[in-house]
Image 1 (cartoon, rainbow, N blue to C red):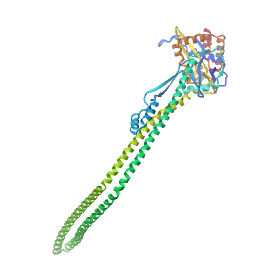
Image 2: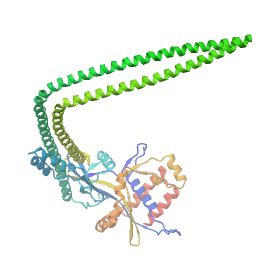
Image 3: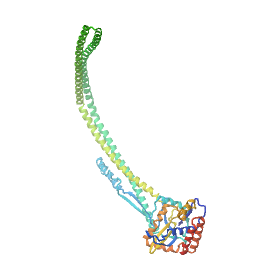
Image 4: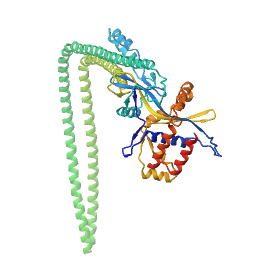
Length: 537
């Protein structure tokens, strides 16, 4: 057995903390917690302290793969391992082997089982009674071992809570955990084996398809070579004739366009000359007007009008020629397009048999490649699902070793966590308040200020060492109410070991209160009130 400490000194506390101070502090806290009654609205009934006792909370520690699993001996907590269900891997492997006789059967098998390993909402669960898995709890619990004291028997002034979970029943839980670990290892092994089988089978079929593709290419190679020579010779002749026709048409239209361009340039030059003469006429008109030469002005105006008419005729000819040039270029384009189209059609006809043979070859290859790609895609999708399930199981298996704390022991043993339990009674009703293992603080200015504000300073003496452990102990009152046998057994033992009614109990508590008062945790008034209450019990 291993027994932990209830209280340890805070790092800033230099004063010693004696056992009678610990009990005195707990008594004062219990008295502050006790319902005093006397309220009009929301009437609170006066409670009596049934007992205040120092108890030991049991934890079973079981070795498991280099760690120790911690079980709550009272069974207030449990842990459930949840993981996705997995279909029958052996049936799937048999399906691979059964369908590997032909590609058609194998591809059909892959299509039918594309979602065989898809993670669904179906889960498997393994409940572990009493297993404490909260990481914060495990971390705090592990740190207590340096302070733990090996004992053969628990101190006689402490109530040992009898574990409701026996060592034998928890051994069964460990056996289930080991079986789960073995199952997970076996499933991962089978998954990896099936992945290799699936990959190898698909690779074999793809190699066969690639070999078949090579055979198709070889099958058509000789025939294509036989057709290609005559076809290329005929196509070369067609292209030669087509090129000759294009040259002839181009030259014909080139001559026509040259003639039209010459005519156009001639009229453009005439227009330019007439424009210059018109500009000169305008200057002569202005000069005659300045000299008041009416006859000369009239002659030049008549000449200007004649020149403008001639220029209009030239521009009309230019537009006509431009239209003819555009029409000629359009005819040239149409004739050249017709020649090219006829040439292309003749070439296609010349290589028709070659094209049909190539198309037949490419079609066979395309079908084979499509089959190969589909097989690879289906295989890849199934393997991804298998990998996902395998990783989930590997993570769960690895996580089993993180359910405990690292210890170098290899035997099952009990560890006891001391705590105080106060029981208050009103008529037939009981109310329980546990006080978890605590750190003993030093009196500080902030504590004195809280006391000045009406807050009992004694409440600041203890700080829970572990919120996780305090949370677990807070569930004990419900367990005692639900488990009447355990509650009665504990009450009977606790009444006998009540810190007040035990031999020398009052004297020790009063001595402890005196030390608390000297240290500053109790005022004179509080000390007097607690002393009166202690005397009345």
